Image 1 (cartoon, rainbow, N blue to C red):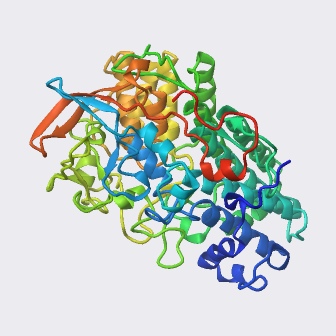
Image 2 (cartoon, rainbow, N blue to C red; image 1 turned 90 degrees about the horizontal axis):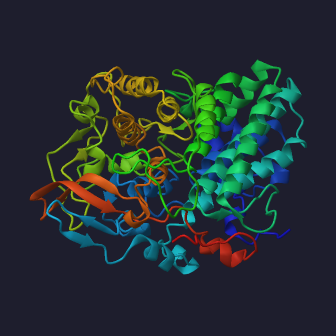
Length: 560
């Protein structure tokens, strides 16, 4: 086994880990000397372990290392997802955000082909170096950094559980912390396996199990830990001790809105949603140019089968329900896990389009049905941002919305106002039920779930169930709704990838019937063909491969 302590990805910053506990509960910080923290001196009590486990998630997992553009996992890694899904555009030079979402070429309404002189795959590989990372130019670095930091803290937490003397029902309290660690390890492996062509299994503190394994093996490992979390939750016998510990692990300022302390059954439903997601986002379900039978000839993954859709349906049926508590995060006035103005894609998009970091795209806006109140409540066309390629947009996202009662608000820059859905949500689970039902022949049932999500977010559009839609039309409604209702939740790129849209047209992919504004904002094209040709699973970052040149699976995606 190769030790990897020299790799900064896996080194745990204990001081940072303990800082967040002070945000939510001052006494949690009073463990040992905060100026010279060590696990031996600071994590030797139940309170100290809870502080360590809490900060390991919210600081090491979602804050550490993301200060180049925005300041959290939810601003940059999730920003890449929204950029590559063409939900937003950007002109900032930081971290290649202005290049990562530019397609290879577009064909305008009049047949003119406009070609990108620097395609995404070449850009990614040109800047996958440690030097580029140091200069803030390697987009492959950040998600890997966060998720392996998160995973390693969970390993350390599991090592420490057996050394702690717990109060109350000791077994239930220890199992609550174990379930916490297993859940977040499942989350970390899912994030790596869903984004990178290969990864490292790291189930011991500061070490890997050996060589690189393919992304599907990472998803298998994620499923293992999600299921272990569920099994561990099932062994908890004291609800009061469970609630007491989990209520400290989740900071109090995150226990509002859809966030809070889930019951054991609610947490198990959250796990089922994530297990369903692991299947859905890592298989192909091509729906290209309105064709439910489309195929992709060259891909790093395989197509969904009827058995896969049945598994998704079973898991999502037992997944997050409306009203369930889920895992969320918010900003605070000071010592926040992320800033209210720069910590999320939503915050970085909430501004007039000529000033916002991310600009809401025309392709995103065309996914709303006519009369959707979410448009009325969240967007205006007072200014046009002009760009020479595909990013020109008439739309700006209004911070805090325009005040339409009962309608979902997309973003805010105010302290604590924006709710980040870290993992699953009611809307995601309902839309998985919708898509699985449609693909299994239950079109009307599936459309009912699309309507339910639109009602939940206050869209105010006519129902689509009962309108005798074909599978193609039903999937069109599904794809449109997933784009608009799950904005800024870390899923957008995975959706376009599995629908085939980000694959090259030559391989059966591409995106059709798009709105693109050209001629400095003067010409609105409404039937543009886009060839994105984005790498489906990213290469392993050079920061890892240089320091840990182990054998095993390919570290570069051979399909691109």
